[in-house]
Image (cartoon, rainbow, N blue to C red; front, side, top):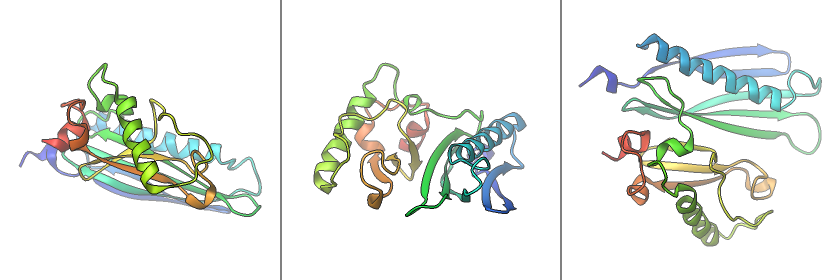
Length: 202
């Protein structure tokens, strides 16, 4: 088996301070080093942006617990989610979740549009699938769902593209994050073959 197809090694880094419990991943022992460096820089930047968005350390009340989940680590694709739960008083805290999907060969971070053939109406296709699913699930929405954002949050797990919405983005707090797993086979006519979904398909 080609060494490139092996999963990358992930190390958990821990930062424990007053009102901060942070676990975040880094890729280790990976070649090329430029790829490892690009992935680790993107992860650290995303973790720092979450802390800043949640008011840490500016807000003295902000109490943060942050961690991560690996969703895919195979076939030169690494897809992970970073979670940040911050409590600053009030009825409940707020969790934000950001996902990163990389080519482990180049270290490139994929945007949603990068998963599809140039010019394909991926926004329309994904929105229609999600629209149908929302009807089935019968979730009361805070806003009328018309379409996803072109850069909607996503990760890749198994042979699925998982589109998700932040807490409050579509529905009340009690519903938490809304996830829409979409099989790569439902999208195969518009998938970019060289992209991470194409790799999962073949």
